[in-house]
Length: 70
Image 1 (cartoon, rainbow, N blue to C red):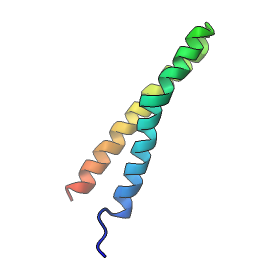
Image 2 (image 1 turned 90 degrees about the vertical axis):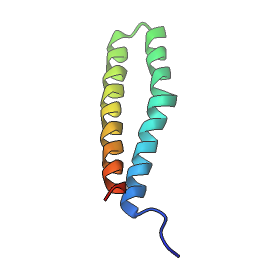
Image 3 (image 1 turned 60 degrees about the horizontal axis):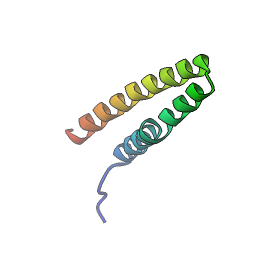
Image 4 (image 1 turned 45 degrees about the horizontal axis):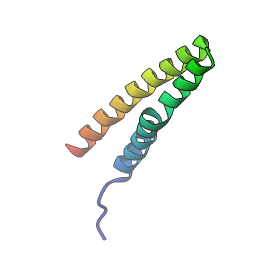
């Protein structure tokens, strides 16, 4: 049986999926909770983490594109 995707592609996809779940399903609720608690320190923390994860997701997407077009 032929592999549909390589192990490298699979690893990138898994990591990208984890970041996507966090960015689209999780982090905004954490920010809202911090806002509800009037916790500017936590709002800033979650926003910084969100920006970092967006950067990581972009890096992973670029790595996947390179891997696919090899």
